[in-house]
Amino acid sequence: MTISHGGRLEGTVLPSPVLDVSGLTISYRDQSGTRTAVHGIDFSVAPGEVVALVGESGSGKSSTAQAIIGLLPDNGRLESGSIRLNRQEIAGWPQKRLDGIRGSVISLVPQDPGNSLNPVKTIGKQVAEILVIHRKASSALADARAIELLERVGLNQPALRARQYPHELSGGMKQRVLIAIAIALKPSLIIADEPTSALDVTVQKHILDLIDELRREYGTAVLLVTHDLGVAADRSDRLIVLKQGRIQEQGLTADILANPQSAYTQRLLADAPSLNIRQRRVAAVAKPTQGEAAADIIIVEGLVQDFGLGGKDKGLRALDHVSFRVRRGTTHALVGESGSGKTTTIRTVAAFQKPTAGNVIVDGIDLSAPPRETLRLLRKKIQLVYQNPFGSLDPRQTIARIVEEPLLNFEPIARSKRAEVVASTIEKVGLPLDVLQRRPHALSGGQRQRVAIARALVLNPQILILDEAVSALDVTVQAQILSLLDTLQRDLGLTYLFVSHDLAVVRQISDTVSVLNGGKIVEGGSVEDVFAHPQSAYTRELIDAIPGKKYPLLANRPISTNSGNL
Image (cartoon, rainbow, N blue to C red):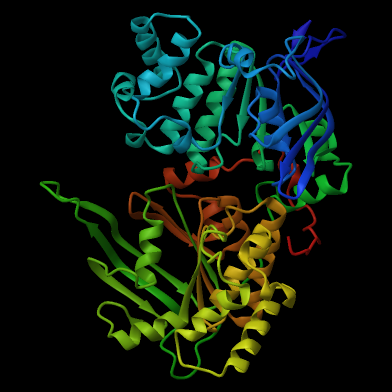
């Protein structure tokens, strides 16, 4: 009898599942009544196996995970169903009894490491705490064991990290701390709830490699909750596809990816950038007309940005002689990990801050020392679309008012004319006119991002800076927004400066790319050349970390035809 990868047995005898869920139904109470979020689902996870729960927001993934570990919110209720952990029924257990198995038998690696650690307690004490609570070590021995665990999850200088506080660690370091806590007592099951969604692509790879290494070493079962189809494809043995609390299909990952049965799964896979290497359309580059200086609408030359840290510190050089050009009507991507200089670059290009040195020219306007009226003109030429559409829209205003507001900040036009412009712009982004009297909370994430794009377009700009503009969206909504951006670029001749940590999306939407590392551009050129023939070790590491490479035959799937305004 041989155990294959993931813990499945190559023989006739199957091991008892670590987790066996049957008929699980979950509901939530709110002011409007009770709604069912999960409808009688069944699945299991075997020892050493990775099972991925995939689906969009509202599919029931996190509710399922929370119910299993007994951490549903106060308004959530496990209506019916069985949850058997190592053959023992735990559904309906009181919290005190569940406390006895959390950490020791079942552990959770949550999504947001920033909000999951105590800010006023040292890292070492937080790792040691689980050993003390479960009486596996005295306080002194627990402190020593905590350092061993921090070293085990790959943190350098573990003794130093144990004395530090969460704010002194990076996001990737904090996620490793949470994994150290999760594995401290070698549980039978780890629930990893979007464990890498907030991390850079290379850090994501390191964290997922670590979870997989620990799974192999300890034989731990893993329930991986994720909206990232590329991650699920690479890391899971079996897939469970959820939609609105119902299982659409489940089975071996390789089988589902090769031959998805449900229309919903087919759409998810078709919309996942990491699973689809599509031929990038060639942008219709505008030729300079008579009197135009050049076809380059953005010119950045030798950009340097220093920030003082105060005291005796010499300060921080955020940008170190950054140079690139963007041709009119094309999409140029800035990629790199957190701290690479992407945000500082776009803030300088948008004239929100003055550079320490270097030149920035936007459509012929030199930003080195522009007069106020020139900056006012620039605001009409260049607009920003941010990552979080809910946070960037005033919740108290109607959509009509939100889209109209930029018009009020420039030359006055009659109210009736403003209404016409707003309505026309809303239609351009594919929204019905009846959204104009609604407020942001009444719209979906995809609809809110369309509103954010409409607000940016209402002044007829020539350039949009898209700052992680699709990273917070579900895969199908993301595909719709990318399609919309492509259509708008073709119809309006827009130029995009696209900032993203998602290289799969960059590969799909961009014409040219600059790779930033430590404030310096380490590589640049056409997307095709950079992705096919990366010259720097850093770029190769970024590209190698893109998930979804395990099943290369999935490339060139038909693009989803779903165009609903999600």
